[in-house]
Length: 422
Image 1 (cartoon, rainbow, N blue to C red):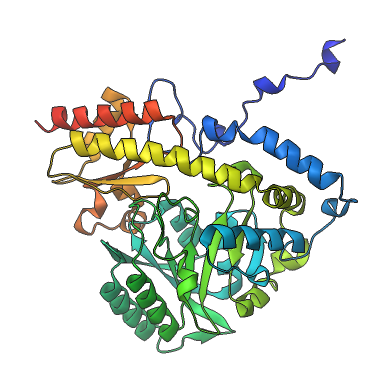
Image 2 (cartoon, rainbow, N blue to C red; image 1 turned 90 degrees about the vertical axis):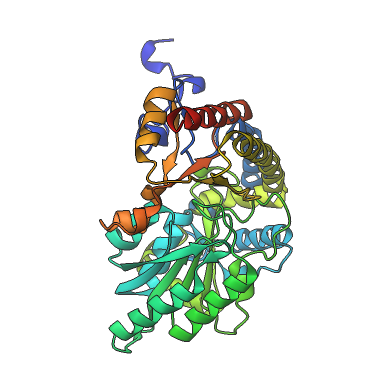
């Protein structure tokens, strides 16, 4: 066979997101505990599942998956997704309240561009998923208002105060072409970066404030399906019992299956679904990932996603339990670490001032990388300094590395704290 006809072995395929999004972050010489993505152990179990699902779908499909799809996604996808979510949440999810997306980021962009006034206001937790701020403010032009976090989630009194101020700033004009004048962007379950899950009381109070003020509530529910124990409630949308609700649950297969499938969903009240499907993007392009949604439909129908989620929960729980155990035993008693009982992230609070110098030293001298809390503060994004911008905290992710590296990284971290702060 000539060289021109040879194909590169599959084993040599290395072109991934790390080459652009995470350049320099995955290095054998360091333990990078900032990575919020599944690692090789999780992903290596997927090829046989996708082979089975592809065979199942393509032997019965007569080619429609290769055509444009309906704006909300094919019905079979939404039916199987509703069944799956109902099983996992132990709470009813309706197929007609589901809209296909290309993942959580796409879902956020679709919701804002379709439902929120241009130049409107977004209330966000401090700290929050910091990359979302680039979309909320940078891409969509929303005015960012940080809200403090407490032990049970968003500080409701602070939220009410700031909502009242922003409503007054708008001069009482809180309607514009059927769009919301603003929104609350929240991660109420296994919060990124703090790991906090909102109490039901906090959730209901948040919904009440939003409903009274005419705000959309957008929940990044990307970790809800990774609980290590029973949740008090399945998702914030389940607490919104009004006929014309305003809570959207944003889900993704990136955290429970594979980031590479670029597939997710919005779960929204029917009246908001009707407005979402009027999006120019959906009107022009139809289903945003029609082919892959068909393959995932079979994964759902064959219960292979359930199998993968169960595996993820088992693996992640073991890693989180071990990380918490090492940190609780090894960190000074004045430092705080709380088990989140789900999701990817663990939040560590120091007993003093800014940990920026320590975190840089930890990486350069000890080969362990953590996410400094100030990077997750919206005030940092806004170029402001308010009470240190969470600089006395840092985030650890247990998603990427195997158990031994997680434990090693946490032990090195504990020893480094004792060395740096004698």
